Image (tube, rainbow, N blue to C red):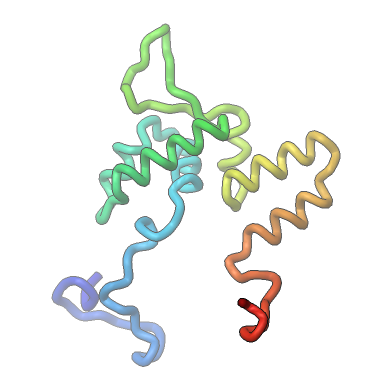
Length: 148
């Protein structure tokens, strides 16, 4: 972080014309947290909110809560209940679906779509849909004169 947000010497491995802006937000603040939470759960983290709060620049608690709610809705995670009582109020565990989604390098929603497509025997068309949805660039462009 030296040279960006704190005093120190910064050694760059790229031309100085391509320097990073000091206002660039860390990736943990810019990207969806569902994949990160699934990967952390694969490593044994039971309380993702507590785990993410220890980052250098932690994401907002609302973003973490929304990501956990999304994963609970996808049935990728469930509250951790051991012996009828939850060890921590925010503890969650992976479901079998969550285990498989955590090992896929894509958005959990698309991963669930692909896994269910594989089970239902309709994977080829869903691969096309997943590829189209996973890119940030639009597949079709409208000329500026015809956008109205």
